Image 1 (cartoon, rainbow, N blue to C red):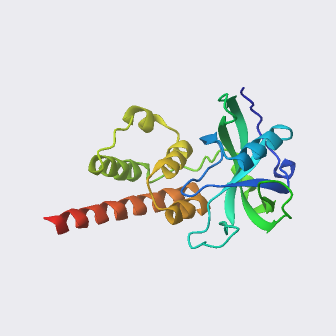
Image 2: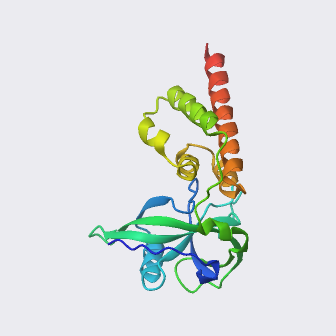
Image 3: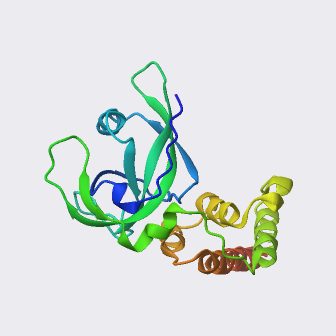
Length: 219
C-alpha cells in the first residue's frame, strides 16, 4: 500500500507527534527509511498513525542516556508512512519518507504504549522544499567516500552515486555511513547542505585516519 502526499506549509504538520527512538538512525526530508515494526508499542503507534496523517517522529536516544524513560536528542525528523505491508504475523514492514526536521519540546502524559511529544518546526520550514544551493565540494566528497569505501571493502554503485542530485547524495551518505550516533546527530543538525557535506568529509577523513593508525599499530 503506497501513500504519497507532499507538504508545502509547515503549519499543516501536527504539534503533537508519536516518537520512535532509533539509535544510530537519522532521517532527512525526501529520503526514505525502511523499517520492520514488531514491538507491540510500535505496532500500536503505526496502527494509530494510519488512522490519521500517517506521521511519526524519528529521534535518536541521547548518547549518555541511561535513565528510564530514555532521554532523547532534541532534534529529530517527522516522517510520513508512504508504504506499509503486513507480514502475516502481527508485524509491519513500512517505509518512512522524511518531511521536515523538528524540535522536541515537552513530553505528553503517557496514555498509549508509545511516547508522544509536543514538537516545533519553526526552524525547519525550508525542509519542505528541495535544497538547490550548489554543492561546491561535491568532488571532494566523492573522493572521500571512494577512499572510505576502498579501505572498508565496500561495494558501491558509483554510476548511481555519481548521477545523484546534490541533496540526495549528501543526505543518503549521511544516513548510510557507519558513523557513531553522535556524528550522525551532528549531520542531522547541520544548518545547510554545504555545512553537512563539509562535516561529512571531515568525519570520513577522521574515520580513515583512525583505521590507518590502527593498522599501523598492528604492524
